Length: 244
Image 1 (cartoon, helix red, strand yellow):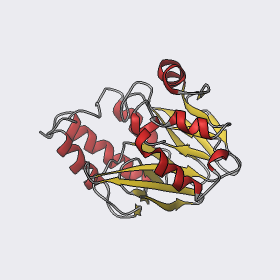
Image 2: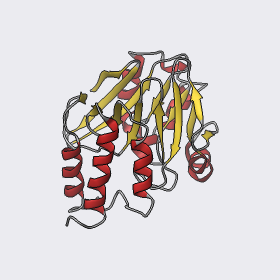
Image 3: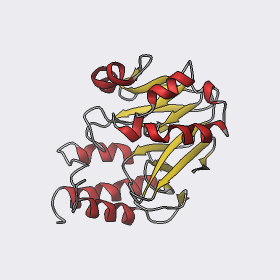
Image 4: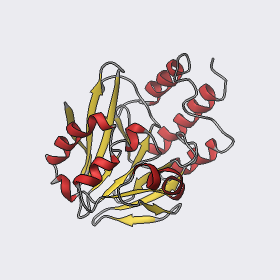
């Protein structure tokens, strides 16, 4: 079953827990004049996610489908959503559009936003930030909802387990634990650490988000600037080799 929780005004977290992976897969629906879905989930989650969306809006009215990078849990069911919603348009970085999305997956071409370009869905305004290799992949980008200060962080703040929808408590410790555990197994180095990582994380922290909506785990509500800075330090320590 997919759980629905409002984590910020008109922003709903749609969460499906997969016990075999001990992992939550979260999509975020923004209910507005032009509804936006961030993350589609994998193809096998399409039916349950569609049922959750239908409790919030008529699914066929979905206008925008956004995601960070080209990966199954980010945009795996994009074609199914576009077939269901005739006006639904992918919203991503130019690199994602040109390199993968339009040719491989999209039923209708994506709209690419330039770095720092904004898009209004009615009451809410979104800013795209190009974040190459953060969390991973060349085409990566993140969306920031400026009206209420919500950062859609994709795999940043990744936490394993069946967790509460949102929290004001520490999630950085959970993120560290996940990275350390992943470094011991087949998913080691799934987040690269490059010479540009620190500058990208500082740019995200400067947004001062009030809510950080993570793909896996709880959304964090509180001092987003501090939390992102702390996550950046964890990434440096664990991924740059200080922790083995």
